[in-house]
Length: 293
Image (cartoon, rainbow, N blue to C red; front, side):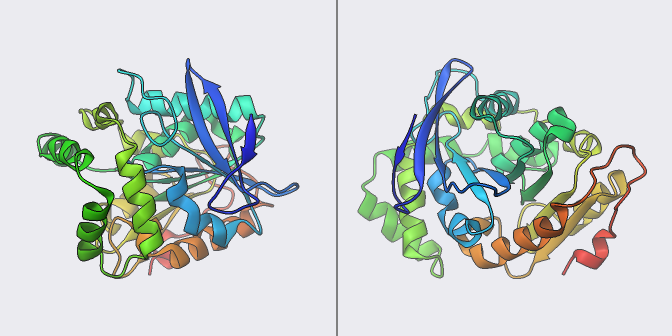
């Protein structure tokens, strides 16, 4: 089912039945446009992609699902591994009949997008990973052992006004509208959703090795994935390019929507006519270093 919804009056929202749960999504729509499936990070939701979607909707049909345990999607008691999230995305693609979509993912959504692409092969057209959760096992253990779940539980007891004030103080240059979206998303995130932090993460280098379509990794110079890691992944898969956005952190879709949208469009535009990689020796590889600035 689909119906009209905000934040843009011509966008629609719908619910897809996937793996025994309901996955809610927003869609910008438009015929004869390449489709981008945009996957948000932990404690986000599809609406959080709104600034990016507005910047790109003239050229792309953008589908923004709420991951399980987030937004208006179902929140089962169990089943929050990256494998579960990837299964939901694959079922969403199948159920909606999407042919050769591009995958866009931020943070948790970036890891999910990489997993989906590694499984679907040439059934996707390309992948964009915005500072995905490609972190070491040691760093993952630190995050899991931190107070992140307790902090989320405390935030669920707070008012929107208090959360907005705290967020605005912490992110002085972040637009008020996106802060409001993020607060709403946070309050819609179940505690179980944080189970995705339980080690181990997927082996991200193996995921990248098994992606055979053009791939772009967009990093913030102060984000969680380093340019050194990106260079190592480019050596594993020469069809992976990367771009570093200077003076930016992990929250690229929220703090740098214009620069992120420009990087996405610049990457995707020539790829609509590209031939996907069919063997380890790339047919159209580009040097990552020349793209990183």
